[in-house]
Length: 207
Image (cartoon, rainbow, N blue to C red):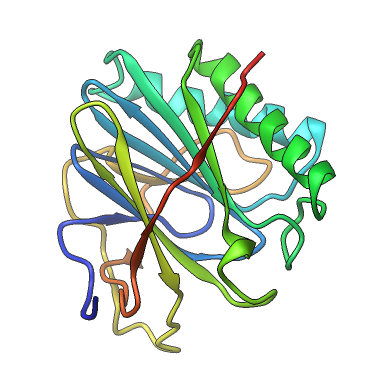
C-alpha cells in the first residue's frame, strides 16, 4: 500500500483523540499507541512519558478522564489495544520482563476504565529496527479493530501538520505532569502509509 492516510485522527505525543472509525499514531518508538474501542467509537492516547508504576497509573487515570468526559464516552467497552516496542528503543524492557510491563500498563488502563476485557497487545519491535519509528493505525469493525503498521516517514517540516479538524473535544493534548486538557495548536493531518500491512495483536489477561 502507498499514499497517505485519509479521514484519520492522528495523535502525536501526549495527544488524546476520538474518532468513530479510525485513529493513527505517528512515530511510535519509545512511546505506546493505546486504543480503546467502545460501542460509540474509538478513543486513543499517544503515551509518551515512559514506563513506571507511578507513571502508568497517572496516565491511565488521565486517559479514563478523557474518555468519560467526552460526549461519546458513555458507550460500552468492546476492546482495549496497546502497540509498543519491547526493548528496541522502548522504555519497556526486552523480552518477557517487557511483556509483563506491557500487560501491567494495559491492566492499569482497564482498571481506570472499569473494563473487563478483552485486551490485546502487539510488540512493534518484531517488525522494525531498534530506532525506527512506526506508524500505527486502528480501524474499527463492528466488534473489533484491525491494526495496521508501517515504518514512520518523517517529512522534516510542517507540511503534514495544521490546526485540528473535527468537533470540539475530539483532539486534545495534556503534557506529562499536567492534569488539564487543551486543544493543540498544530497536529498531524496526514501520514505516509507506504508499506502498510495488517498485524494481529495477541490477547493478554487483565487479572
